[in-house]
Structures are given as structure tokens and as C-alpha cells.
Amino acid sequence: MDDDTAVLGLDIGGTKLAAGVVDTRGGVHSMVVAPTARDQGKDDVIMRLLALGDRAVAEAGRPVRAVGIASGGPLDAATGVLQQPLHLPGWTDVPIASIVAEHYGVRALVENDATLGMLGEHTFGAARGARTALYLTVSTGVGGGAVVHGRLHAGATGNGGEFGHITVRPGGRPCSCGRSGCLEAYVSGTSIAERAREALGSEPSSLDARPEVRAEHVVEHAAAGDPVAARVWAETVAVLGQAVTDLVNAFEPEVVVLGGGVTRAGAALLDPVARTVAAEAMTPVAQTCRVELAALGDAVCVVGAAARALLSLEEDVRAGT
Image 1 (spheres, one colour):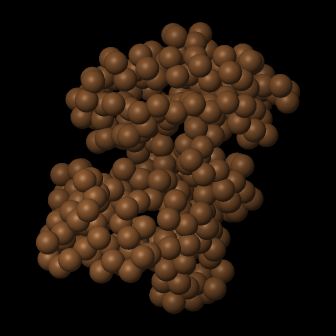
Image 2 (image 1 turned 180 degrees about the vertical axis):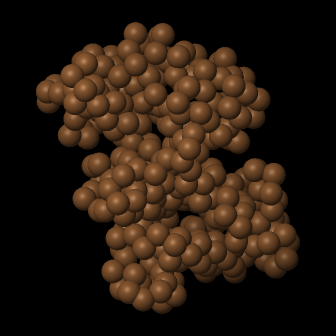
Image 3 (image 1 turned 135 degrees about the horizontal axis):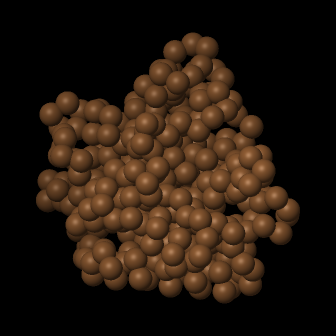
């Protein structure tokens, strides 16, 4: 596979769609983003996703040889079908890979978005070269991925690594998956905003002046000393730190990478989580495991999807096809 090879990465998120053309070194030659607007229906979202991909290819000015698609699950990676993704209500058994392949005339593959975030960071980012690594995306929801002994762990049908749905508070807050007390129900951007809104009125808060409270507002107001925002944020990083520590004890990774929109909080999120892991993880992993923010930033799932497409082309080369 030569250096001029390029692939298209598509990311179907609950809040935004993204598309980018990526080369074999992980270079992003174009990156375009648009709201998912999932309330407009499945067909409209798919049409706009394809148009976004077309725009990315046109802006990059180079043909693509394959397409990788990142999406939350449940999904079937082998058949390329989105079964019932939690972040896309009403999407049942959508053959997204075949739809995309037909549109672009090249192979298309779909895999869990957080699994692909792990692949992107392991191939081109903060986990590059690690034998064992974990990735958590903390965004509209919470997902995860793992590399174990140098190999991406995807699970039997591509839905492995659902770290957002480990129980952190038995009988706690309801989660989008139908269970209660999941990590996602406490640390996702959606949950942060919900818990802040629920807390308003308990005591005076500068958040009261906000017509709409979002997760980034909680981070901002907590840093300014607002007591309601500070309490919500403290619970968020405490729960995330405890969950990451449990995962570190289970996997003994060299590095844990944190990505997703909530990680735009930067050190306000990274530092307390890293301190918890260092203080509470079992020896010797507590001394050897790094906790870092995703090096690929907002492009992590697009680059991860592209990395999956590149892997499929490399497999063809090795097989002589």
C-alpha cells in the first residue's frame, strides 16, 4: 500500500456527524462536521452523512479506496448492520455499511465508535506502541475500547468494551441502556447537564442565569467557584476516577486514554482521574499506568474509522488480493 493511499472516515454521533479523508500516516486532509439532527429521521441523517462524506472527499482532492464508519452500538460489525444503537432511537437493523459502500463504490466497514477511537489512538495517537491500552470516550454517552497484547479487542460481534455500562452505583440513576447506575448515567455530558439542572434551586447558583445548562457550563462555573456546579463536577470526576481505577486493575494497561467532548475540560478532568488511579490502583500498575487525553482530539473517531479501513486494505495486501 503506497503513501498516496487515502480512505474516508465517517463518525455517526448522537450530537454530530463527522467525515474526514485520512492517509496512511494518519494525516487528516479534510475534516467536516455537521449536527446529527436525529429527530429529523434516519433517512435524512444518512443522506446528510453521505453528503458530508462527499464534501470531505471533494475538499481533500483525492480518491478514497475504502470507508470506515464509527457508530455507537449495538451493531454487527461482520454484516455492517446497526442493530439498535442507543444514541439513534428508531434505527433498527440499518445496513449502513452496504448503503455507504454502494454510494462510494468501495468497501465500507462499521465498528463501535469507542473501539475505533482506541484503534485510532493506538495507531496514530497517545497509545501508539502500547501492548495493552484502554480508551474511554466521555461525550453524549460513554464508550470504551481496549488493545490487549497488541490486538484490538472488539468482542464476538463488535460490541465489546462497553465501559460506559459498567455499574458504578447499584440502583442509581437510570441509563439509556435500560439499566440503572451505569457509568454513563453519571459522567456523560448528558448526565452532567441533567444533574446540574436537577440541583438548581437547592442553593443560589450562577447557573440560574443560563437559559440552557450544558456540561461545558458546569465545568466553567465550577472553575469559578459556583457551589452547585462544583458539587456536580466533583461527583463526575470522582465516579470516573473510580471506574477507570477498576478497569486499570482488570486490564493492567500501560496507558488509559480519555477522549470525547467532556474531556475539553482538560486538566480539570484529567488531573483528578489520574490522581485517583495513582492512589487507588493496585501495585505495581498504579506506578506504571499513564492516564492521558486523546492526542487526536475531536478527530479521534474519524481517524479511528479510517484506521480500520486502512487495516482492511493492508489485509488485502498480505493476502495477495
